[in-house]
Length: 450
Ligand SMILES: [Zn+2]
Image (cartoon, rainbow, N blue to C red; front, side, top):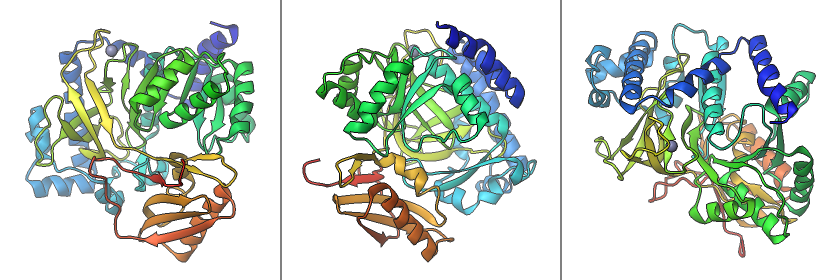
């Protein structure tokens, strides 16, 4: 451990938490212990937490009271895991239509952290979180970062879109002392930006590289083609998108270390992550109850695909009970030889977003466009980007209630800001269906030769 890593871990991280009255490191300490508990004990605790949040939601959220009552179920009826399936599933549409009723009556909306999320399903949602929930989620992410050979206080390289701007002294200090991240902006990947990033990387010497699978793959390809072989992180964390087997192979070969695949979403945080054995993804059951459900509502069996339905056990600001994420996953009863009691899921299907192309040949990670458009502009309910040539882009758009001509103008302007002077067509549609495979394509590139 370098001296700066030591001080970041043991001094600046704790001090910053103290300043913010944050429960992050305290939660991390607890999670570090619970991961080694036996599975039966972990699941007992998980179920007790689920019963508690279900009761809380019924007592404090108008939406749940009405939906439980209409389904003829009361919190005290939930005595076993199977009983949970009596509670109606919560869809994105219901969240959009009942945002007020889902927020707990114990909070004022203005005291909660609100976030507009889009993921790569291309559907926008407004959610509310209590402050502790955010910090607890950060702790769960840190626990799993450590499975990828990263230690608290270590530096990271992130292949990510819209890097946060360090525009205040506080943000500059936070990044220098605590977060310690350098960014390669995935909205502008080209020879120069990647080559500059290699120079920064060599000076900064991060421990791990973090990013969308496809961006990691593109960057690995650039290094291989240019015979750059001295970027040797201790770990690679792939997140947000499906990691394809061929991508994993290339990334691992170029960087000479294992890829840690991870799955999560903005609505509930980290859902599952591979440990150092890379033998499936451990479910974060300290914070979530995850179900895999077939079309008829019955639970999917082991090795069988099922819709992923999650109950968030920690967000009391806006409880999400049996929320269908719209990804498909596969559960397994297998245990991992690492000895952690956290159960495993095999894989997840969903979340595909192609890279798009600028006229100068630079690549734009489709997934990175979400937070500049879908979640930033009013009135966009769902969208899909289709690029047929470098000169034109078609945006399929489902309009929300607060859509206006202004929204369309802002959307076109935002695309021109990223892609330059090209033709932007907006096609209004009623819905954007999932592909038959269960995948959602947020962006599709059909430019010949790509
Ligand atoms: Zn394991």
